[in-house]
Length: 450
Ligand code: NAD
Image (tube, rainbow, N blue to C red; front, side, top):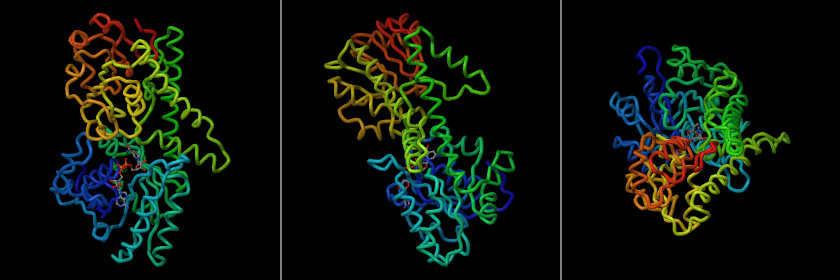
C-alpha cells in the first residue's frame, strides 16, 4: 500500500480482464480514483458484488480494500466511467486474427472510437488515452487518428504503456515491476503518466520514457525473447534425451552465468498461454509486412509446435504405442500454475490427442475446470489426484501446481492399474518414481525411462 500523500488522478480503465482488472485495482491502491469499465455485464455484475471473475492470488482482498476506501468502482457505462478522467487506459484483448497471425485490433479501435465520443459528451478538458493492450508498432498512431476523426476538437494525447505482469504473480509484478515503459509524443502526456506511476518512481522502480514506436516494440521484443529462451532450452532438452545429458544440470550450469540468467530455462511441454503464442505470431507478421522477416521468432514458433508434437509421441510411447482404451489421469491443464487461464495452454493440444486416440481422460486442476469444461470436451473432471489415478494406466503431470509437487507417489502407484508416469515439468525423478513402485517414468530432457 502506498501512502496517501501526493497528487491523485482520476483514471478510467477500459476492459476488466487479467490486465485491466489488475492494473485498475493496483492504480486505486496507489491512491488514484479508478473506474473500471467493461462491456460484459456479467463481469461488472460480479465485480459490483465483490466477486473477482478471474483467479489471481491476492486480487480479491486488494480489490475489496480499495472499493471500501471509495477509490474503485465498476460500470458498463463508458460515459459514466470516463467522466473527469485525466487518463483513459485501453486494456482490451488483442487476440490473434484468424488466418494471418496478425494481432486483431478490432477491440482496440472500437474502444478508441467509443472513448472519443464519450470524452466529447463529457466535456473533459484534456485526457491522455493510454494503450495498455499489447499492440503492433504503429497502433498508437492509428488510435490517435481514430480519436481525431471521431472527435476533431478534443484535447487529448495518446500514450503507449505496455504491461509486463505475469498471471499468477500479477499484483507483485505490477507493484514491483522490473521497469515501467511509457511511450509518448510530448511532455504534457509524459507528465500525466509520471503522476500516475509516481508511487513506483518514488520507490526507485525504473520508468523509461520513449517514443510511441519504441514502447510498442519493447513489448513484442521482450516476449519474443522470452519465448526464444524457453524454446532454446526445450530444444537442448531434446538433445539431452538422446545423449545422456540431464537438462536440469545443464540449465543450472547455464543459468549461473549472469549473462544468461536462470529464469526461463526450465524444460517443459512447450510454451503456451495468453501472450507468447499470439505475440510471437504477431511479431513474425509485423516483420513480414516490413520485409524484415523475424527469422528467429519464426523458427521459435515452428520449434515450439514441434515440442508439443514430441510430447504426444513421448506419451504414446509411455502407453506402449496406443492411447486406445487406456485410462489416463492428467494433472494440471492451465498454461501455468496459479491462474485459471487456459488460452493456448499445451493441454489444449495434448489432451485432445489423448481423447482422439481413444483414451478415457480424467483431469485434475485446482482452477482450470471453469474454462476447461468448454475447451476440453470428452474428459472427466476430478478434484483429487488419487481418485483420478484409481485403476488408471498412466498419469501425466502437465502443469506444476504446488498441489502436485508433493504427491505421495507410493499411494498413487498402488492405486493405478499400471503405474506409469509422464512428468512433463520435471518435478520428480526416475529414482523417486522407481522407489515408489512406478513401472515407467518419463520426463523432459533426461534419459530416465525405465
Ligand atoms: P482479457 O480477454 O482477459 O480481457 C479483455 C476485456 O476487455 C474483456 O473483459 C472484454 O469484455 C473487455 N472489452 C473488450 N472490448 C471492450 C470495450 N470496447 N469496452 C469495454 N470492455 C471491453 O484480456 P487480457 O488477458 O487482460 O489482455 C488484455 C491485453 O493485455 C492484451 O493485449 C494482452 O496481450 C495484454 N497483456 C496480457 C497479459 C496477460 O498476462 N494476460 C500480460 C501483458 C499484456
